Length: 310
Image 1: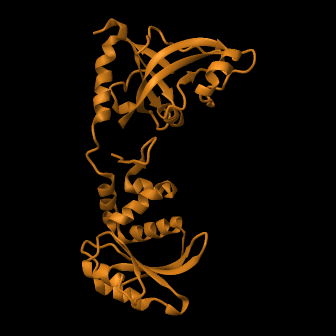
Image 2: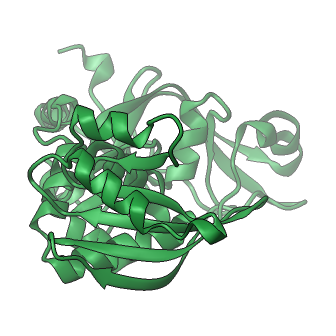
Image 3: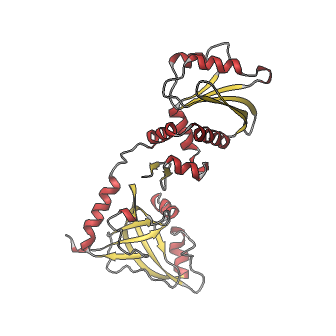
């Protein structure tokens, strides 16, 4: 092993800080006035591993290359480092007359998979601020990197669709009504149908218009056929210009798709299981926590990505 690379460090951060560092917006980690980082024997080029505050116990976000650490007074910080740093509650910028330590980094890399500290090779190691760790921990660093590169064995979309199909009818009906309300649909009434579905009537409210809709929901395994499309169209109140949409956890037959778009007839909107999942992911942040828990899904830090909660 190269003795010049004997040490690496782990430091706590927040997701927003790491996002900015990864985008090249900042490359200076500053410490509160009066605090001194325990950089120990870190040398230029040594890796620094970032642990987020985002989850209980923290998650490893990625790593960067250590360049240098130094103490600077207020004037030098304002002149050289302020634009390259990011003020946070735990580390405010120094005020006139104060000094602080700054750590300069480079080459920020995000991990593909975020590993919780309690599930990582560093689960039982105390991590506070910045800790130089000796060469005996290099095998743990390499193990963490391999864990972070491992692709998720479960596709979030497939998992989400399976969870929807496993819901009992009452929970599924309540969830769909909740999702529709997030999208902008004001539920006026619901009615169970004889064929294992539910009719939801209400208003779709947007910034530029309000439209009456009847939504037919089918938690089916088999494909929805053209007869369901015709039945819904026949139930619409034409006197008020009511529109129709069919939502299913399965899919539609070709005849149903053609019937929905038949010329000379009111077009019926079709949302299959794949499209339903996409809508759930699009509006995921607005979904109530009780549904997020039952769906077993959470948003990963930094990006519009999701992972299954084991």
